[in-house]
Length: 144
Image (cartoon, rainbow, N blue to C red):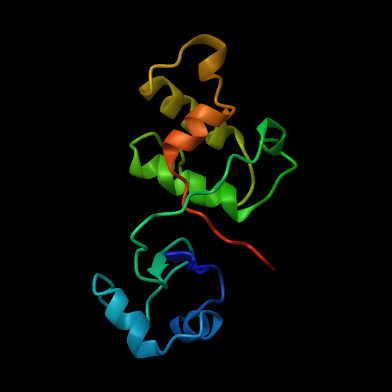
């Protein structure tokens, strides 16, 4: 089973060589997997860099439970969820998602729930198992 996520979200201070080292890849391999990047010297926080070939069977982040979604929680899972919401056209993020659960995350997830046909308290923006699993948040395989 592949334990490397397909994409890495660039953070402040990252460079392509640092990302390559982190995932035990050559710079040439990273460049080959990311032909859409025009200038490898100009990556910015929030950019997504492919660090693994897509697996034949995608793995998704398991539902972390309703208690996970609180303002005190900071996790890469929240950021990746936000990028999926953006992919689905359900974003209200002014500057894109980040690690911290926020009102923008809740409002974006509520848009997703309404897109799925949920109403009332089922569209409150707090992920439930069914709406989470249908979003297909890529698994991060966090072991650190």
